[in-house]
Length: 504
Image (cartoon, rainbow, N blue to C red):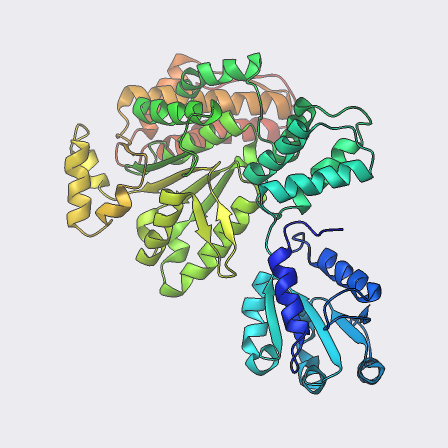
């Protein structure tokens, strides 16, 4: 039976095992790409006696190295070498560095072939540190299967398992897993979905496929239902009820989400990318939080990075790995890069690839996809100018930031939009105070069964005490702690449970 999508790998294995010296193979590929299937096929070819000379009438034998004593390890290798018809398999060779010196003499023997396996990351981080050992192997990359081969693999698997599913639904599995599941390769991730569908014990439809993938990824997939359509249409208004004084930001990000969900956005880039400029405390972070929860439907949809942690030259690799890992675990997320101007300029260069191509190449060579992510970066750069002149022209401010060297023009041009967050005025501070007091009152009622009476006088008193155009809403939160929460704490400490509290 033909091993689909592995023709090139098989040709390289054949050439490698047929060499006169160093006829050893290192299979490099992530878990799920089909390394084990290749090895099984080689075992079948060796037993058949109809294959190429390097494996003709050979036995393919796996050596389980974990926990083995050195004496038993040596004994196994000697027996395999003396048999003169054995291909020895050692999986995850990166985990056994202490054995490399012992293996080298056997790797050079004329009548023993060794096949070892590893993944991309460990090849790069471990095996490259042992060039002499590595030189004894023919490196064979085992890649993900393409769309057509993955479809063919699923057809064979469905037929063998007697799963009732048509070709259209099989194609939808591959299409959706390619787009929405980034932390596993093909064909493994498609096979996993097929196995979950088998549990339905019915004829599988496209709707079944979409539901299973949606449940697995927390992404709404398929036709927009009435409830979701209502959310998308009303998204802007619902966000405005919670976000005060930043109508431009709300409008732009709401439109980006509607483009994403209706499928008309450019899918070669992230679903949306925004740079929020403005002074502290005016709602940049809060806007991102509300956006993430409103659209992605889960509180942990915002992945936050404090960019001041990545100021040094050596921080590029840690940032790349953390960012890639986060988006691979949850492709539909909002990536929040807080205080971007404090990060190293090399990270700005790295983010060019993310903003322009919707992908990021890890140290191992694997790519992480950001094509279903919203990216929001914030910066306090230019805050003094915005506070001094809330009506400042956006282009003038951006030109000033470029001239000062804060950001390169090609970097700023990669964002879908740059949004200015303006300082809050007294009336907006009053609205925010009312919202924060209402949130506290709801928590208080839920947790302690205490009813807080919110009067206009209380709102005026707190907003007046907390209003500070230089620090935004943060002083309001402190004023609520001092003037309201402390009074409620005293009420509870006095032994009161439940009841009504009115603060004057």
